[in-house]
Image (cartoon, rainbow, N blue to C red; front, side, top):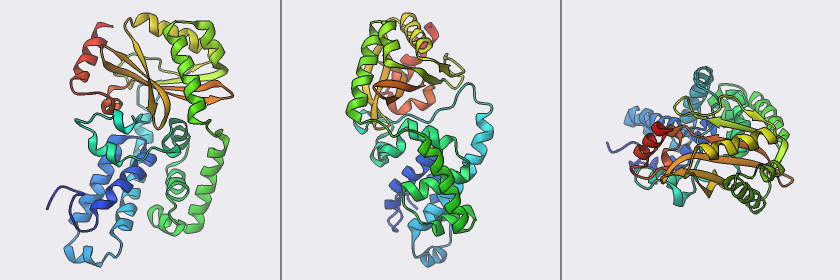
Length: 311
């Protein structure tokens, strides 16, 4: 038997779809890979005669991956209660920016669209595991409620109600601005941040803006969201003052314009933004090094540890 997911029995081509489903369900690259790997392991553990009886291996793998993700979502809620600070989904680089030493395969698999923006993933986090599975599989991937019912072990009608409930949560979230419009705002934030211009930052931030940071207890950052544009501006300038040599780069984050902060060439923070009416309403800053691996080139993790130890 070859590597899981690479055999030529008609299932290898399903991996891309399964990875994309799992990431949208879990928000974690590592957990998504594990879920898909487990689904393939269960497939190849079946007797050959049983596999030959399955008319749609892709549907079987999707069902199993969905059930695994459902279990992971249930346990993740308990784990995140003990997570240090806020938990945010893994930020995704643009395909060209991905670490091509360790993440080439995943870079080729991931589809970057509106269903992986940080704003969308954060809304998904507010759903129950069953709502999330029903909504993502139906509204994003167009699976029928009959297929979803097999995953959730509920009736199609119940799954339809779950998706409707989840859809109401999504409607509360405002539709994103165009990438070009967001890029302009993010560029102005970068310029004001670099020059430590508090007044300019305050003008760019919505008065009710919220900034959430995820350090995972592994690096220093605020443990609770910062509320209010003025407070966020002061915090951003304070960070810049404490980190001489910090370089800000405009980069695609989960398919939309964002910022990457580097020191000595090592990625320290990846920031995502939500923008409305020309102002930033939300900032999500990921600093947890475990979640930044796709952004780090070979050797950068070592430099990052050295930099953090000097802070």
